[in-house]
Length: 184
Image: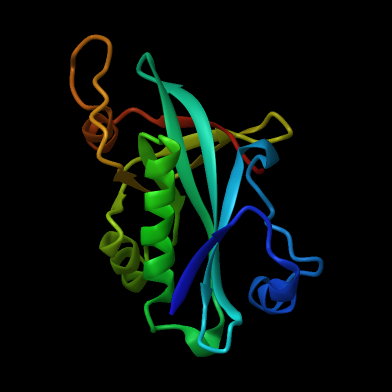
């Protein structure tokens, strides 16, 4: 298993990337195009992409603190390559990329009713947010969902009033977390 990070997919990988992504041309439909950072891909021994994810970086303000959020999206693995650790490796590499970008917290959306998905992301340091979050779609409509997981990226960010670390507060507040703009 080889995990690689690409800003653009090299041409010789496009056929296998398209097969995993199931899109032609292979593009990463982004929550916000300007926030896109990189593709994280899993490559097998035959030098084919068999797994992929996208990483975004997005600035937003929460409780008076300007935060850099890393967003992990579109985690996909070809059916024949599942349950071999690719998705976990992609998630771990993605959080390292987010850390390297200077992100304060990592965020993803997942089916939290599926215990195997929750276990997968927990192995990469994520925990269910436990309450609602909102984002504003391209149309201006505000969406509210409850399917988020977040991960601390090792940066203690204290709120201006000194009430605590932002990551811990996000997990333990009943306030809706507004993550800014997104797809919708």
